[in-house]
Length: 208
Ligand code: G6P
Ligand code: MG
Image 1 (cartoon, rainbow, N blue to C red):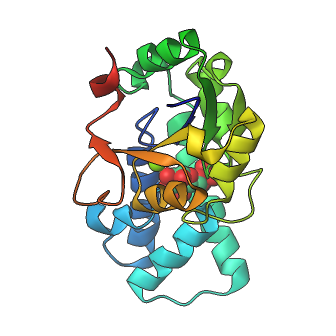
Image 2 (spheres, protein in one colour; image 1 turned 90 degrees about the vertical axis):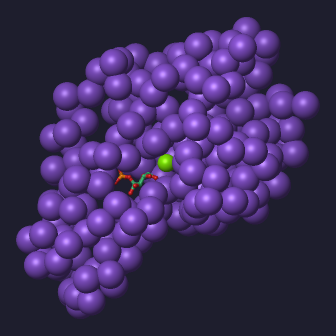
C-alpha cells in the first residue's frame, strides 16, 4: 500500500531531459565529437559533475579539474537559458492530475532529483505547492544509483522506504530506488528500465 510517492523531476514531471541532452550535445560538439541520444541515456538521473565525467569518457577526452569546472558551468549556463523559458505547458501529460489525486488520498509527495535547478523548475511550472518535501541536488552528496536521494525523501515524509513508491525515467534512478528499498515505477522504455517493478509510458497511464 503506497503511503508516499517520490518523483524524479527531469523526464517524469517535465520534459527537461531534452534540454539537458541539447546542452551536453553542444558541449561535445565544441570538444569535437558527436554525442548521441543513446549516449545520453547514461547521463539521465546522474549529477552534473558525474555526467561530465561520463561525457568526457565517451569522447576520449582528458581535462584538468579547472577545465572540467568551466565545461560544467558552460553546460549549465546553456541549460538554464533553455529552462528560463519553461511554463506549465511543458508539464508532462497527467502530472497535475496524478499528483492532485494522490494528495486527495493522503499520500505524501516528495521530489527526488539530482538537479540543482529543481526548485527553479518547480516554480516555473507552478507546482511547488504539490510537494510536501523537495530533495534535490543541493541536498545530496551521492549521485544516483546511490539510494541517498530517495532515503532522504522517505525520511522527509516520515515514512519507511517499503511504504514509498519511486517514479523514475532513468536506469540509474530505478537502481537507486530499488537500493533504497522502495517500489519503483519506471517511466519510459521497458528495455532500459528492466529493474523496475512496473514500467509505464507516463504518469497519464496511471490516472484513473
Ligand atoms: C537530473 C537529470 C540529469 C542532470 C542532473 C543534474 O537527474 O536527469 O540529466 O544531469 O539532474 O542536474 P543539474 O540541473 O543540477 O545540472
Ligand atoms: Mg529523470
